[in-house]
Amino acid sequence: MIQEPGSDLTEKIIGIAINVHRKLGPGLLESVYNQCLSHALRKNGLSIQREVPLPLIFDGLRLDKGYMADIIVEDTVLLELKAVEHILPLHEAQTRTYLKLSRCRLALLLNFNSLMLKDGISRFALTTPRHAAQPPVPGGPRTTPTPPEAAKPAAATAA
Image (tube, rainbow, N blue to C red; front, side, top):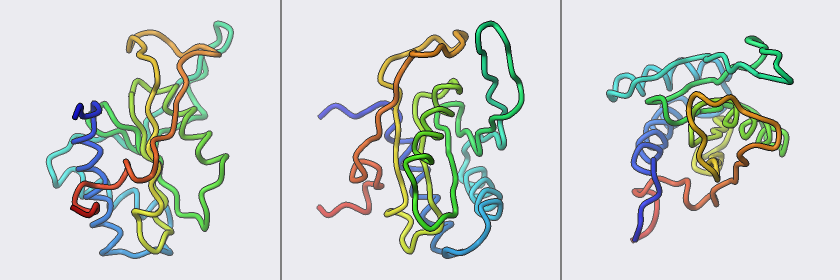
């Protein structure tokens, strides 16, 4: 079986996020989960960046402000954190847009306001590669959500 690129890293991130959620539970502010998850990721040896600006280039105009990735792990996986009652299609679209604007190939949308975090995880991947220095273009690479069962850590699946 061929393993999807980045799956070891996303499994590790998901496992860490689940541990944070188990300790804190649902109902807190997104900023609390952001700080605690960032701390836990670093403590587990992962390099992260928080509140990363995602510049937008439109018709030759560069906008450096307006879009921020919550967390980027190992310069590879974008994390979009939410603490909402339900993930809406708009949240998924926002995550796809942030992924296209970033230099990442993978994104995880994590809703910490779920009773069980595994039920609040969506995984997205770029379907076509893009050179890291190439700016995003309208109609450029598209993202596709990964089925929820693929977003669960290996330990959570039955053998």
